[in-house]
Amino acid sequence: MSTALQAADEPQHGTDETPLPRAKTPVTIGKVFGLSVLWSLLLIALGVVAVRDALVHADLLDGRPWTQQALDFLDGHTAGDWLVPVAVLCLLLALWLLVVAVKPRPRSEARLQADTGVFLTKTSLRRLATSAAGDVDGVDTADARATLSRVRVTATTTPDQVDAVQAGVQAAVTERLAALVQPPRVDVRVTTTGGTP
Amino acid sequence: MTRTTLSADRIATAVVAAILAVVGLLALMWRFGWVLDLPARSSTTVVADLETHAWWPWALGVAGVLLVLVGLRWLWAHLRTSGVSQLNLPGTGSEGRLRVNGKAAASTAADVLADNPGVRSARGRLTRDRGQLVVDLRASLTPDVDLEDLASVCDTVAADLAHVLERSDLYCRVHLSVTGSGAATSRVQ
Figure 1 (cartoon, helix red, strand yellow):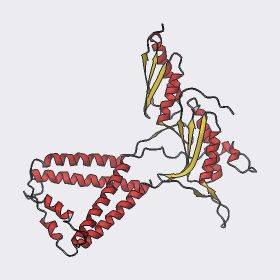
Figure 2: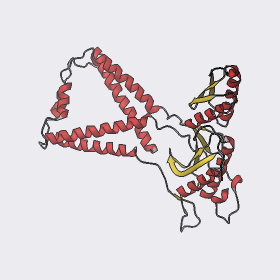
Figure 3: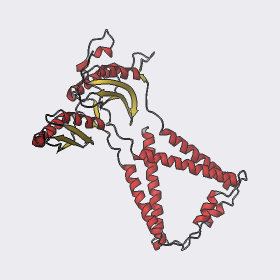
Figure 4: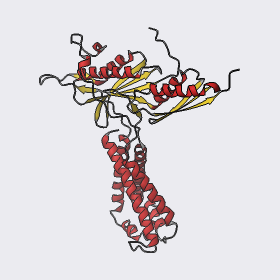
């Protein structure tokens, strides 16, 4: 199997070589990415306004400078109660942005036990759980929802098999995901489809 | 996205947060007369007077162009992919460094991975992620795959890559993706 990667005249190495070390766990793109696209667009917009106003000042464009209009708008207001909700909004937004700026990006895949980096996607967790649950005796239909920390499986069966299926699905899904470093919690809900005639 | 871009993004977001916080605090100070003794009526005449100077249009124009350029550069930094194709291998002697197309090594590793029960297909590439040079393999699996077995196969493939590529700064990551539903399929060869 390893000859595909090595020259034909080299001796087989394979198992006595340490594998490439594990890369960092994959993470989602994070909110900071989208926000930064927004900031860069705002910068461009501000720049365009500034250039436009400069051209108006130089009499190369018609109209009034927008910066002047903005300053006129901000002039002559008295401190009223309207400032309070504005202030609260600003402070809440500031807090949220600070948290987003500082928080590490959440993991997007679950790590498997291995020397090198092997990861399972969230969708894979869901499909493995569904498949494992579906293979249990007595299960009519099975469905699952998964996050990296919790898998919720729903299965349907006949009323006389509910307890057996509950235990069976719990065991099957837990065993299926046992190869993970931090196996998610498995919650099973069994509903009935009606008795056999 | 590079680490520099990510750091710049975080700093920029924190700066916006700081600006909003200052605006909010100033609004409260203005309304309730705390700390600063802000006048009862807002006045923008100080800034408006700036506009009457002869250098104002120039300053505004230059600032505007700079803002647009910075904004575009920053935006572009978010659109770049992080694939790395040429990889220099440590060679013997001063003449000639062995050059292996990193993509080819990763692709071969993917082919090896794909040749296992439970693996439908696999592809590989070399990428840079958060300061690491990573051999990134992606494999499509059937739902009945044996995960423990596959994990040790991945270790073997990673060991072969370590031997072939001989770099101390390479990492490996295999993404496993289960595709399709339920029924076990037999591999007809």
